[in-house]
Length: 354
Ligand code: SAH
Image 1 (cartoon, rainbow, N blue to C red):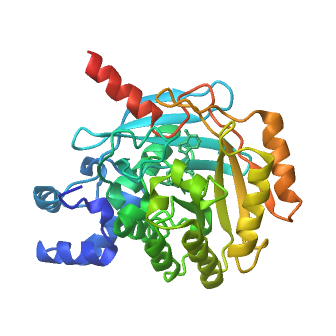
Image 2: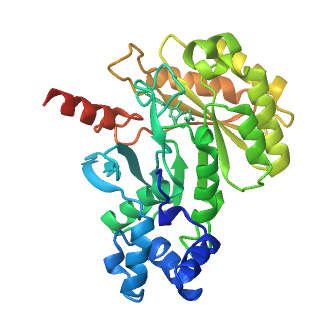
């Protein structure tokens, strides 16, 4: 958001604003709680805040807006895919997944993405803008309100590259774990990155207890470059070096995302090469790494096909021979536009046609 939204501010920043407006300091705690605990979408709901203060605040600042434009509900597993409208007319996607351990929300960190991964729909038209911390939080709050259910886990795996929006990401992490707000343990938060090396290093210095997921998707530098342009900037060894350092500094095991694409990166030799790659580049192999295999969700703009179930299982077994912990991600909401950025693209295409 270009102008500051109140949802993105730390309590001490709100205090400063409230005092500048000639009001008492304690009002800032009340406002923070209205936004982050009671999750208001309009100041009309904030009963104990003086009308004059609300007006003064709204003259200069905004409340972040994520309004439900569309919501698809999977008949198979209850997954809900939301399309939210922002204050400037842009739209973003978020997904609610229901697991046995509770509700997980996958949020977007940018409108679009500029990383250019070949199999991803979010990046086709590039990035439009960063999301503010408040807009990231608001996706979660809107879903809690819409379903009247609590969200216990958050994954930043929707559209956008969170480490390309680093300052807002840090704000988001501090706010979501704030004791006066939602107070979510960062152990329940996963940040997924395509591998921006200096930012991974910077993040490790914060000692957050979050899970870092690296989108690896290939077993060698050469193959990674074919799928992910970011590999032209940082080599696979540099990225894994930063991941290894992340584990040493934070004690948190890395999660490697590997999208299985039929006849592209799913051969037996790929599994072998991948295990060797991790063994050679991770200092505490295999205890510092977990691999998450994701059958690619085909998008119509590309010809990639998903690896068969059998081949995925063989790939998994081959990795496990090296003592690596491996899971195959359950495909949630297969009957709705599940893949990153697909719902938004369809929405924008529909607009262009009409
Ligand atoms: N930019 C970040 C986070 C967003 S993408 C990142 O690269 O990690 C979240 C995950 O979904 C990444 O692992 C990404 O590679 C994967 N992904 C994107 N499009 C996909 C598709 N069509 N099928 C399967 N996985 C996909």
